[in-house]
Length: 278
Ligand code: A2P
Image (cartoon, rainbow, N blue to C red):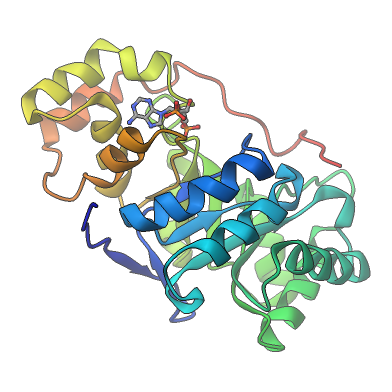
């Protein structure tokens, strides 16, 4: 058993959130149901799912099977594209909670802005109501560009606590991180390891890893943490789940950041202006 004490970050609403979490995209109900109790045993406290992932039922079963009280876990889900709009969001939220078998969420996110549908401000108003009713502890967004965040701020006066974006050394998202810093929004990074594979084989990452006697994945996760970003790596393997939490005993140096910065721009991010999701 791994006894890592995970540092927390504080959201602008005062809610504290674990500083690293477990992503579950592309995992089935069956997989997450057994993986979550293991991950919680290893020290994970933040579990990230979405209506779109189709695994909320398994996430709920995994959370209930875990040997940790619900109030020590931090469960995130996201409203599906098809459920955007005020009324539909309220119904979509109820459906997510019922699949999860939970009576509240710690964090609920708008999954993609889908600006061509023009519904994300109405969706956000429904989020604010659900938060006021005590059914969500913190509300945020995912894949929002600065202009989408501007609309939420100016039209509702409510700033998202979190923006969860695709972020990794090849996709450093400097503009959106600067916006988040200015408005006290915490950035979570999805696919923080660049979905495994190529990024972890890059010479620049492995040079830094050798200097710290850490693995490539641990260096990439540290790159997120050292910039105040909350990564949600996924793994279905016990050793890698463990390794991904063993990142709180070192820090990157300026030279490490310089090496890793050479990878910026070597991958293309999904574009929130055009992504549609049903
Ligand atoms: P696996 O589930 O076999 O561990 P991301 O979170 O960026 O999407 O990356 C997830 C991918 O990275 C998965 O394919 C996962 O594979 C792999 N992965 C997760 N942790 C590690 C690690 N510590 N070392 C190598 N690969 C990893």
